[in-house]
Length: 416
Image 1: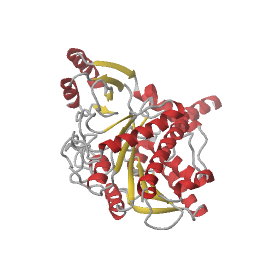
Image 2: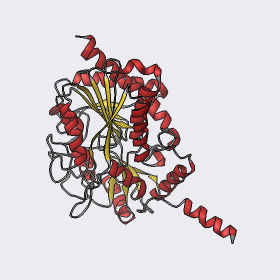
Image 3: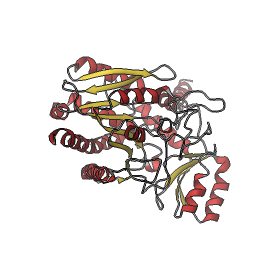
């Protein structure tokens, strides 16, 4: 009887924290080689049986898509008939999610107020860490609540500064897409290195860092407790819930690469800035646009470092500068352990997207340096890297982000 009780306890402990099951779902890596193939594949994006984990970026560059059991046979037959190359890199997505869940539960719990780079932290733990820094390092770190999420969670921002006013600001945001769990650790590592590592004190002497570790806390928490691969916000709809926050900004909204269908992963909302989360980012950026010199939106995945425009194939006037800076950032990241990114704008992209944060930052707020950073994937492990490689991802990314700092310092201060 005791053995049975122990078994049941163990079984219950390792059961998924998520309500939605991906049992039987497969993940495919599909490589369009022609524009025709890519165009046909794009038509699956609004189908409820398909969830594109990575973006269409360029021909001969693979895109990862999860397919429900009901659509797999037809999808495979379609790919074969069209001559589109594909591989199945996850046979059962639920098994990978269960493995992730077990790793999370086996790892040491984060002490409230501490930060961890060996597991993915929950939102309350993230904000507790920011609050702790606000108290213990009040001379350089100040938190600010810039709004409330739809479900009432505080939207946290932290500013790291040596004091003074009218200094250049490096603005970073992460997790506007809920399921991209590797993005907040990068933001948290930057905060940790700036605030708690005295060796980096020079990095906030002449510039200020402003960081929003989780733009979409409702969706982020929902991905932890209900639907692991939830991407959007949690605002209710008439048919399906949620809006893609990175299609919700009011700059060429719904022009291309966004959907008006509520159930689509790229649903742009019923109007620009329909989401309180994107409103909060807008209000802060516009209020500080004269000082913000870098807008960096952290995502996963695909190893891309992208700059505007997303809505058109026409490059911005300063594309050469953006490309050169991006190349320098990539070189710094690659020097750590060989991880490389593809740097470019919409000229190298297969399909445009509109209503994005970086496009808004550059096109409306007038912030010259605006980028999207898509971090590495989890490969055969699933959507995110395994928790035991968080540290390597954040460390190498940090080296690239320091290049952004150095460039802003040179461009806006030392040239004066």
